[in-house]
Amino acid sequence: MARHVLPQPVQRLIDEFARLPGVGPKSASRLTFYLLRMPEEQTLDLAAALADMKARTRFCSICFNITEENPCLVCQDDTRDPRLLCIVEEPLDVLAIERSRAYNGRYHVLHGAISPVEGIGPEDLKVAELMRRLEETSFDEIILATNPTLEGESTAMYLQRRIGSTNTKLTRLARGLPVGGDLEYTDEITLSRAVEGRQAL
Ligand SMILES: [Zn+2]
Image (cartoon, rainbow, N blue to C red; front, side, top):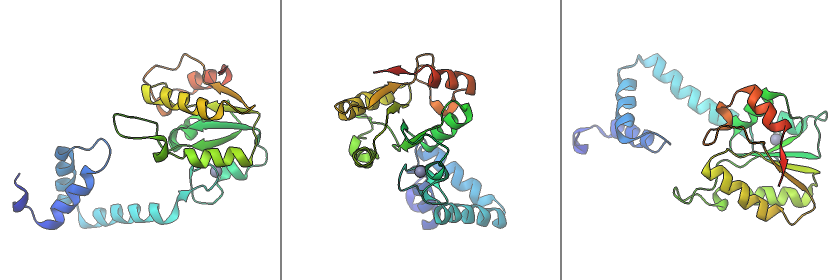
């Protein structure tokens, strides 16, 4: 569709959708035209949900998980082991590991993984925040729980180099996780075995 025939507000929404990960120009148009035909009330609900999500959630200033309260409930929870730290890529990975019930320490959410192909480097992740945290707080064990993908593995290797010089024990989730898979899609039993069988690096 030629750009100039679309009303500007429609084109604007298409452009916004196209900026989302995994949404190409075609899906962006399809979503926009779907919304265009949707009852007004439903469209307003969607807009309100977006605004509400932004207004009422933020990143935890300690672990960078998404939270309504700062610090988040995990960071506030005194019954959790403060000497254990688990580093994950995304907030959904925290959820997956919590579901496995195999872990009772703290987290650090990187918000992505190193990917030269997509131009994502350590400076785009919460790595500087992690290094600062490690200077202030000491842990007995740090679990590198990035995904078993190419990006996840290179991120774990990078962090191993950065953290490896300290005395902290570094571990990686046990093999047996599907290679190329994401933690968030791993079933609870597999994930809890991977956490329990984690290996020293
Ligand atoms: Zn937190």
